[in-house]
Amino acid sequence: MSGRNPKIVVVGSAYVDLAAKCSQVPMAGETSSGTALSFTPTGQGLNQAIEAALCGCEVHLVSKIGNCPFGLFIKSILQQYYNVKTDYLFTATAKNTGVILTLVDTKGENACVRYEGANIALVPQDIDAAEQAFAEADICLIHARLPKEVVIKAIATAKLHGKKVILDPAGTLGQPGSEPGVSELPAEYFSVDVLIPNLYEAGMISERSTANIRTAKLVGSDLVARGAGAAVITMGKRGCMVVDRTSADHIPAYEIELVDHTGTGDAFAGALAASLAVGDDLRKAVKFASAAGAIACTKFGSVDAMPAKAEIIELLQKQEPE
Ligand SMILES: Nc1ncnc2c1ncn2[C@@H]1O[C@H](COP(=O)(O)OP(=O)(O)OP(=O)(O)O)[C@@H](O)[C@H]1O
Ligand SMILES: [Mg+2]
Image 1 (cartoon, rainbow, N blue to C red):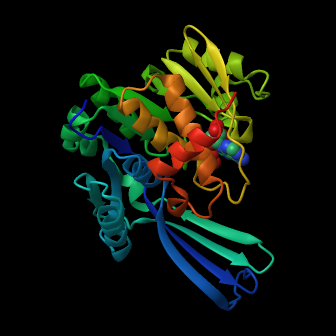
Image 2 (image 1 turned 120 degrees about the horizontal axis):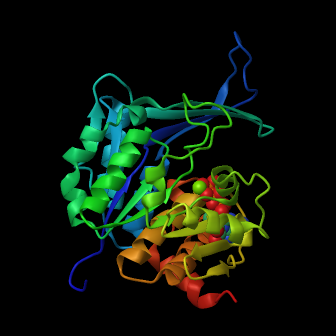
């Protein structure tokens, strides 16, 4: 693999995060004065693509935006600041770009609207149109908060080209239109090489709602028994459990001062893909990803919290977890 950067195709959501600070979150019919406004690109696919690019990979993001200024904003930030390739950032015809609209008052109380927009207009034909990116990639990373048929098509396309697939199943639970409490994942989701749920999601998927650090091994084994090559169950500051057909290993978290948890899972996923793409084995890649997740916890925001490769290596060298 020497002589070229590792290549990753990321399939996942993209939004603009619009946040206003206000004196008081208004009730229906009220207006309150804003004191600050920020707008930043976000979304699990976008964050994960940025993280993989910050780790030195050549990254294509397969996602969908609207034909609107927010869409152009996302595209230009990805291209200009992060060098993420946007050839397969498709444009929806009848939906605006996804937006997460948040109001926060002086006490920190907030109200939020998530508009999925173009994210739910991604269709399997878009995956067909992006096939070249799958064919050239070393690793395919998918975040499942997308229509199921798109996720299934992306898994199938990556496998057709013999590529390793990492699937973050977050967001399949409680997706728009899904029945509350129904956690059944399509069988195809278990055909991936590495499934990376957090502990709560893993419990929902395996129908062990009492999943905890002591039962994580068991839950991971359930996921592997259902077909996944390996399960990496993330458990926040308690580290993660890596389970495959031969063993189960607890990888402790790095010790950090928590500032903001936003984006942590995405830093973990993007860095995991980057490490696997250079040929690291799964446990080594999970340690690298854990350092990325830990660093993301030390910074505010999502995109702004994604660490660069040099920061990750510095933490790895400073603190070797037991
Ligand atoms: N407080 C923390 N201290 C150190 N490392 C952490 C902390 N929180 C998370 N991490 C690291 O990041 C990994 C992923 O975090 P976590 O399990 O919280 O993911 P998540 O629930 O998917 O997050 P998200 O809500 O962002 O999707 C953890 O396994 C751990 O290695
Ligand atoms: Mg997550």
